[in-house]
Each structure stands twice: as structure tokens, then as C-alpha cells.
Picture 1: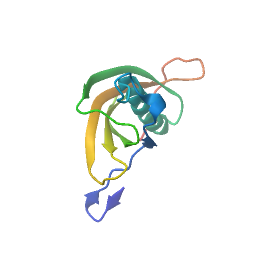
Picture 2: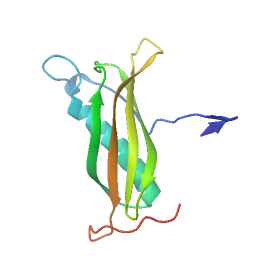
Picture 3: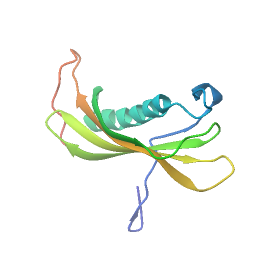
Length: 128
């Protein structure tokens, strides 16, 4: 979305980290966070491909800071390149504590998806 001349990013997913999502140390599991990122990027990929897509790679996953129970987690997915059947998204997860306004980047990675047909074979991306 653009407001004036400024691009405003919209989160693809916004969720709350819950106690059931924690590891034994009390922080949120990295796997839970990665799943949220995959859901967000998969949603963006399906919209771009106008159909079913599969995750084929995740590159450069870096965790900067932990997520705590009760934090709001916002996931952003920006299309960075396309091929004949594939798409790459820069995906970032940010957290905001329930009693604050500051957003802190938690992790980022590049997710690659391939558009597939009803037989689960790669199919060309539509123009766009």
C-alpha cells in the first residue's frame, strides 16, 4: 500500500505468541516462528501464482532476538524475484510486546516457492 509517496508495509500475518509455543527455556520455539513465516510467504506466493505453491527452500535464516509469550508477531513477505515457475520472497518477522509500541526485528530469511498444477508438477507463473 502507498500513502502519499511513502510505501507502507502491511503484515501478511499478525499473531500472538502463546505459552504452548515455547521451548523449555520459556522462549518461543524457532520452529513455530519459521512456520508462521512459511504461512505468510505461502499466502503471498499463492496470490502471485494464482494457485497452489510449495516451499522448496529457505535460505539465510538468522535469529536476532527471542520472542516472548504474549508478544504480537507480525510477518512481512516481499517478492524479490521470479523465474518461470518459481518465486523468492524476503520474509521478516517482527515482535511487539503487549505493553509497548516498539517493533523489533526477530528474524529474516529468503523463502523460495514453486507454483504447481493439480498433478503437483511445476507450472508457469501467470503474467503479473
